[in-house]
Image (cartoon, rainbow, N blue to C red; front, side):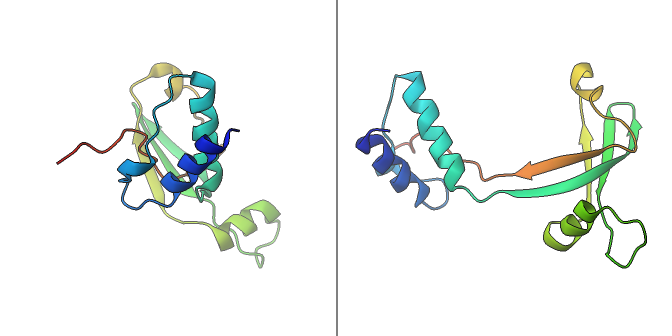
Length: 126
């Protein structure tokens, strides 16, 4: 990766609240933009939760996070790790795309990844 692109990515990674106009570098080359975005994702902290689909009603899909303690008999070791290390709660999604909706199945588990949004559009002058 060229040095100018790496420095721009590092400056942008250190910005706060999605604004850092001096870090924006315009690139027309799609490959260079892709490398820039990949570098940003590598620097971003990600959180992964494991959820189980509990119901599908029409186009609404409900999930709950896995919860198993190591005291429970027959626990899945991965679920115990997720219980100790990741968020807990419920997620309810409305899915209007039939092809996407068909990907979910009651009782099946899924991973949900949370990564920070990186605004690649420069802030407008005020």
